[in-house]
Length: 153
Image (tube, rainbow, N blue to C red; front, side, top):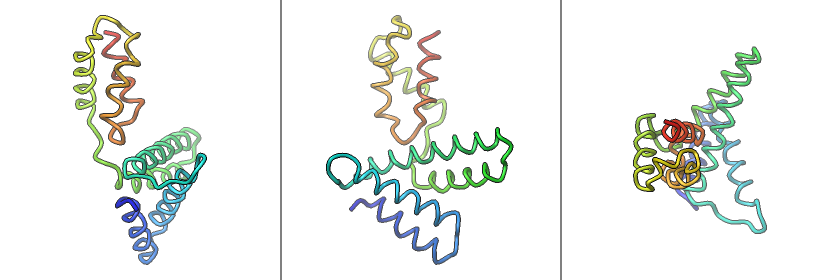
């Protein structure tokens, strides 16, 4: 079993004993999502730590998007709940890259592929090169926006 999954389960037990409702419900939800990912497809499999980070990233993104939607819809209490859940999930993700670090990775990928003059046609090539480097450490939308910005100029 993966170390990250063990840590999530141990932290769930601790949160339940401490009567930390937000943390325990969030960890339960995350562990359920991990289990669902393990049994999805034709045969069940054990997820690696990298796969679990992928699940955590998508769950965190769902929470951030829901918080924005609730805030825009005039539901601040629900937005606060989603934001709190996103914060709990963020504790288990690797440290996020800054905008400058993303820009530097994109710049080096453009230089390596020689795609500077190709414009937006090179977007897929650049994204394919940068995405594995930022997996779990940056939102794909932010990376794509930076690639567009650099290729468009």
